[in-house]
Image (cartoon, rainbow, N blue to C red; front, top):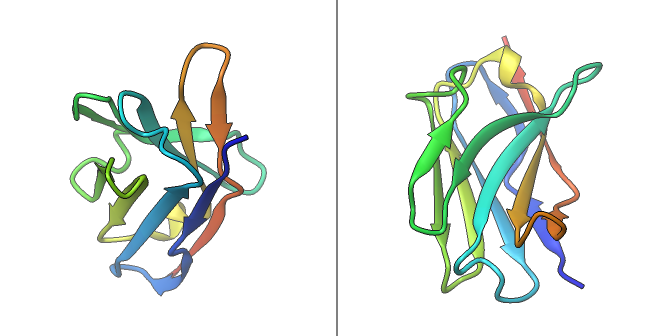
Length: 116
């Protein structure tokens, strides 16, 4: 069984920055796609950013230019640098690793709250 543990969430004022981390219990990052998702109260979970095994990235329009996803395969850690945060970024943020169409791992989530 693989465990993904997110950290780095917290309370920040609008315009501030946070850096989220997602650490895996074993080496599953290399060769697999990873991503960050978020879920705000009363809303469905949505994609924030993904990074392919080759390093190509994809972002939701709402975070383009403000968020940066990156990975350190050697440290089995996924990152999300979030700048210019807005109150609408408030949500629980989850990391996800996709090994196959049937094998997907999720972290437990970390709360990000942006005050206006």
